Length: 302
Image 1 (cartoon, rainbow, N blue to C red):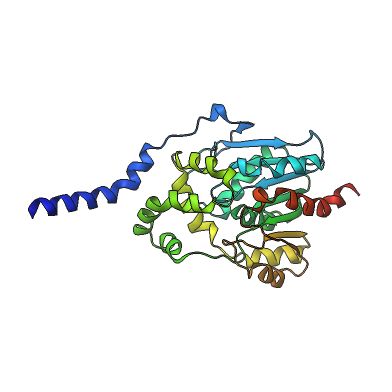
Image 2 (cartoon, one colour; image 1 turned 180 degrees about the vertical axis):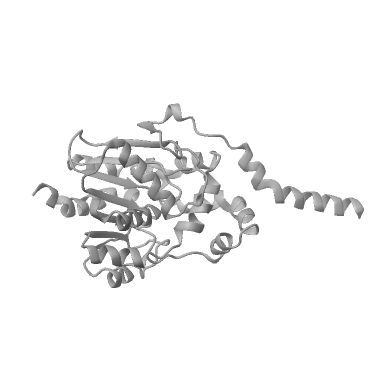
């Protein structure tokens, strides 16, 4: 009986420290292998990559919570073919970018984008394209820098209405136990998230092997991923910043209430629905998204 108790306690102890052990076994990305370039910013290096011609209007594309630059592999070249210079980059703690300390809130991501644009000397009107949490980041930046934004394009964006499972909400809201639960569940959560976009599976698996990625996801969920951006959207509407939102009809991450809520916050926002698309519509329905954006962006050439 004593040995049974000892073994049971040992198993419990092992489970308690397993997320920390798993994190310690992960490695840092080899930035020498990064396609594009590593941009040295005051808080940490950012991996960036340009698509399209050397000249033309600028689109900055921001990826979401857990899927770095490869998620733009299908859509970015299509936007480049329309004549745009498309800048993509890895958020801190993802892809080849550095791990940077601090709460991953709106100010955190605004600081990264400010530094990146300053590095490239980009001051002209910018079209921001954000997917999922990248849409929330783009919204926050646009609301803070409206004079620099030509338009805001949201692709299945968070920041409006979300469908958050109760278990994930528990992990996000309860520090300590939530950290442990998220550390244990993160691989399964990520696999489920990208199941609809099989081309992202290798990328997701690679992210799970990099140190800092799981803490970055959790910090973003706690400080950015679930925020409702009513004030930001109303500010953009009042300032006359054009907003275009494209949603997937079968999205299980963004609530079906999102288009109606956004319309209530910003009556001038243009909205489109891609039938049959889920949350990763820039990957699974890139051609349909590009066709919609071609019509929206046509004014740049008129």
